[in-house]
Image: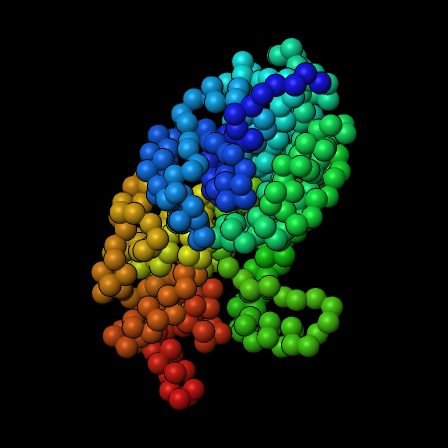
Length: 428
């Protein structure tokens, strides 16, 4: 393989929630890393030393300005490894969307150099790395395993834990020739404590199976919550009793199960099967939870003509990420009941909230949102919402709360706010 002198060890293509923590962690490990991203606002923030989103552990690293993000791919020609972290969404009809990867490849083609490693990082459908190999060999003069290297090295971090998990999780390395495998192992050994080589499709399925297993696990928890409420039972008590010193399984907490890492990945498997299965059933169950919360609160009190507060809009606790959040869907189901007002509040998000589905949503302060609230839906389990609900209880004990995350800590999904005060009295 022809040797080429490179200025940078690695270039990260796509410096969002996957790519930026990776690039910054490489820099901290002494790797000469650089980034490319089309988002001018993101580039400006990073290059000015500011994190463009919330991810603990990286503020000082980005402030050092040792990781620079470019707007065009010319820098790729000067980088030994190219790590692609762009999104891989689904089309509306359970069909993998490869357009973002194709656009990156088209922009990257002129800058590929002998000896480079191209590494896919984001979740992809089975066969995507083979597609990339065929695309490269059809549209460029490069041949994988001869003068260009290719691997799929999936990220498996949880949002909010990137700094810890990039250094603690084993790294799967999918490659199908020795040179590609060795190059990918050498790169990621700077971060990961253990490298686990395999082939393309096995690495792709490892990532998908990790995510889908969690998605199905949470769907079962949500179905149990629905069944329990239908029979007038308490899902939190059931869960406590079922899990106590029982060695064979653990019932998960119910909640709004969404986010880009879970909500779509089942489709990358189901795209290739025409038959109903448990993955589609899990999707249906998790997607039903917003309707469940509205319909089962309606059995207890009217939402029509009431002032409603929606606590949280991001898909996950203590993050500022609304991608694939179910809170916008919950918002629309509440709207169908024709409440007097809906006050959305999420202190992790800007005002207005830039929601592609519902337009720009007014983000009220939590005090404004709850000032006259008669019904409250807890959409996200942000860490301060227990105290928020108790403040509401002292002021408006008759307000109804739908709290599937159990932020109030009284082991009830539907209750009047005064129950929080009563529970605190019992404890004290």
